[in-house]
Amino acid sequence: MRHLIDPTDLSKTETEEIVNLALDIIGNRDKYSEVCKGKKLATLFYEPSTRTRLSFTSAMMELGGNVLGFSDAMSSSVSKGETVADTTKVINCFADIIAMRHSVEGAPLVSALNSRTPVINAGDGSHAHPTQTLTDLLTIKRELGRLDNLTIGFCGDLKFGRTVHSLIKALSKFSGINVILIAPEELRLPGYMKHEVCDKLGVPYREVESLEEVINDLDVLYMTRVQKERFLDEEEYDRVKDCFVLTADKLENAKPEMRILHPLPRVNEISVDVDSDPRAAYFRQVENGKFVRMALILKLLEWASQPEHDRELIGDDVIVGKHHCSNPKCISNTEPHAVKPMFRPSADGNGLRCVYCEHRPAK
Image 1: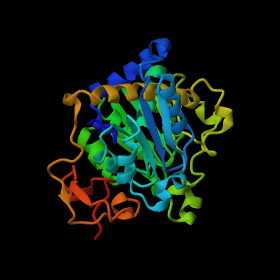
Image 2: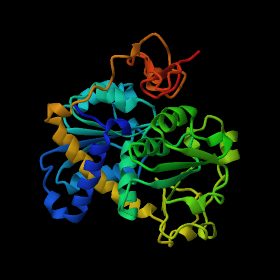
Image 3: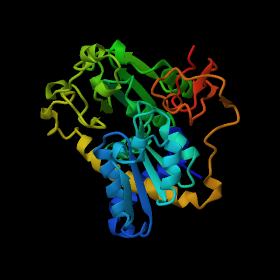
Image 4: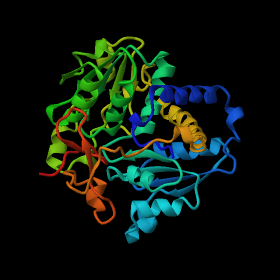
């Protein structure tokens, strides 16, 4: 079976296939209006969401399919202690494809390991958000006409920002990508991302603490919200929550063709006076999410019937049950009775990484 749990699950060719299919959908809406007739998408959203959940729902409806599921886990058997694996096995009886959003890292992977239908990770904690990444790629392609030869600045919460982590992974497949990381010390990109993605895959990057000093170099500025829900320490959140605010005057030195992206929701990191600037693409980005999810649903349903597209989720190098994850938000810790800890050698050769969330073993 083929699933989408992490952006690295897709090759460059497959990523481009999905983006190009989305572009065809945009240009030929009627052609795709009944292609999923009789198919059902289950949206299992254990965590609040507006854009992603409604985008999946709208995508399946525009393809002529039906949608079932829940937007509040406490209204399901999860409130009675049902595991992710068991919920998945139940939903397999009703749906042809699953989209899962979860606050616990690794939950969509566990779902995929127990599913006979395709599973899409619609965001798991601060780990990954691959469909937002596809949305971002489609937006860049539509706005700038290319996915190669870009200087992209990521600004704000780079530590917990799963959209940032996922997009850097995806962009690493394209040539001529330069990354500028704009964040305070407390919110810098995790070291494993810099080493295992940027260093290993040859993506040049530099770290700065001032947006103004680099804004004139950027083709894309990717703003992020400082996510209060990811912090264990509220005092730390209060120290960094207003680190970067993009205002219209800060755009004076930016390129005319530069584009501003944001996964939304925003709090105050982009002033409303930026919304009228033609470089502000974040609301166009929302609509692109529907089109790219339409394309992804079609591709996964197509690949589900083609054995040559099957992929192993867990490799032969995995170590099972000998270590415990250091991340309290990892599913191997939140469902220890049902999920065995699994680790694989780190890509940089430095120890082990959790299969579910990429954290190191507990000491």
